Length: 230
Image (cartoon, one colour):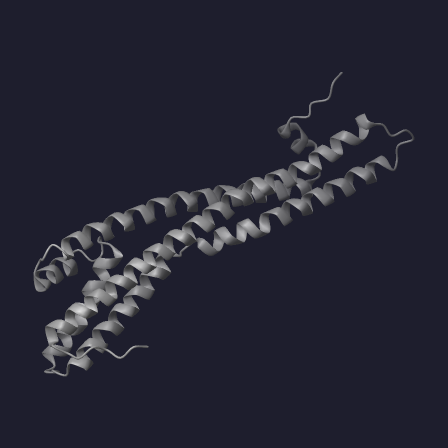
């Protein structure tokens, strides 16, 4: 009678260590896929919000009116909106303190925008380290399960008088399943990590460019001399 070599049957007959490894890898895969889908929608939402705000910003809307709208919707807006609101908030606070030195006003607005920029990047990079960990660790966890399964299989064969392919194959097959599942968990995580890193870099460049452009607008409005090259 032919043996059942389905993955489910192989796992049911595997040692408890291999079963534990497989359960761990499946859990890592499920969590990484959830993180991937959340990150896809989060980056798409950020991109749409940034494009909408940039369109409104360059349409010629009054900065004070734009700041009022951005301050009201900062929690539900995009990173560019929050960066702009941070810069304008600090700029206006310094003006309320009767600070008229253009360099001080510009430096304060820039520092506020840089701090907001860093917070936005930190938020965008949430779960990236987890995906990188899954991509690098999962194959080795699967390999551990495979090595343990093969050791377990050969230990069982030692007590047999006659060893054939039919007796060796099930143990080897159940051990190799762990490696296969490890790769199944790792490959999507690595691909997603690289893609998200690229997307976040592009968004970071967009936010840094906006920060410099807005700083130049404030500089022109204040009539300050150009900042020295760094």
